Amino acid sequence: MKSIRVIMLLVSTLIVAVSMSAWSQPGQTASAPASATGASTMAASGAGSPANGKKANRTLRRKVYAAIGKHKEISAGNISVIAKDGAVTLQGTVTDASQIGQVAEIAKGVPGVTSVINKLTVQKPFGDM
Image (cartoon, rainbow, N blue to C red; front, side, top):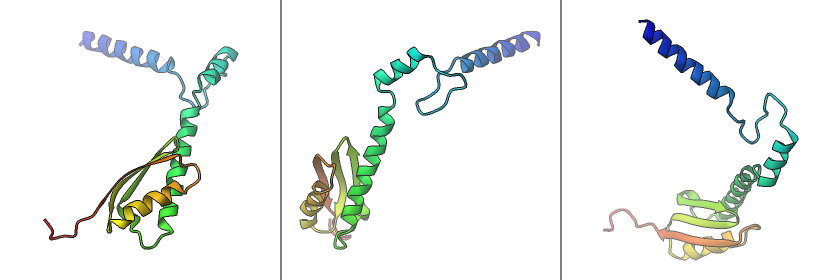
């Protein structure tokens, strides 16, 4: 019984020690102010840029969705847009073969899009095998 308590005490002490030495994530405030060298290292490594990159990617993806949505003849419900650093990938299905190129041209016209990878296919109607 005493050995179990000792083990539990050691494990809980280890958990507390590890949690106290954990680093704060970018964008979170730390309880103690960062040293000048730590702050300059973080700024030099660009640790804050991935969050800005993700935000820019989400914004670009939304702009492409909005541009496609302006064209009522295109059913955008089955189209997936992935944006990464200006490169846009279109995946999913459209109802007509002519819409494949049309959706790609719409995406290319969105400001911030540097390239478009078109993986759209034509949706087969039910019953066709």
